[in-house]
Image (tube, rainbow, N blue to C red):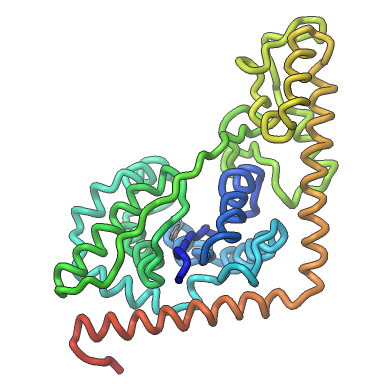
Length: 331
Ligand code: TRP
């Protein structure tokens, strides 16, 4: 019996932070225990917005792969690879681009939102408009059934299904499956300023921050602004911006204790953040240790192995697609 095939990708645009760890990677780790998983580094997708300064993309890609291995993604369990190594993604993207109406792309809410939000780059490009077409090729070339993504990616997945349907309809086949999103419950990870943790907000705790930096950042969380002194009773559930992190890092019992002591004004924010920093650093230490181990191993070889597995499947799909579209084997 074949296992459900899962696929997801991440753009290599910088180092990973706690938001990625809890929001994305922990979910991927769980999935790799049960399903046939394909995880890839979407370097061409990074290029759609970073085409003016691409020199960083390669560096970030290798770094991202090392970080994936450090948190526990395993080349034994999952197929881990990099998009631009599999040229067939580009070939399938090209075929799709022939029949995808421009209007489908222009009305995509994620596209409209990004055009509005990113003001310092010229994104009125052919490639950026086609971003979700490339994403559809990424997914469909492996005939993935499930795609773990955040809510922001749901419109892209809807388009992937429309593209699969249109292909099947045009060429009178039942070839591409229609993939479904896996929308896991994602904890909101606050950055040190209380906004969502994000590299671009400058409020992130990175997995590769040294321990003293992690500690300093955690100590700088503005916790409960209505509690200037320790002797003022706190209201962590409603007012403390670090509480979402506390919920993640403390077991239920410890957490209840913290809430009780905060409300009674016997536990101050400084002490509480110290405890939180200990927990976060304890978790990160495992990742840092693993990183050192991986660096001594042939991690590039692991990447090549994943690339080969992915390439075999992608080539097979393209051969079939060419036969479906052109009624013959192409060159
Ligand atoms: N667009 C995704 C993001 O920004 C990355 C991505 C590219 C992706 N191709 C994909 C995710 C295929 C899932 C499946 O997060």
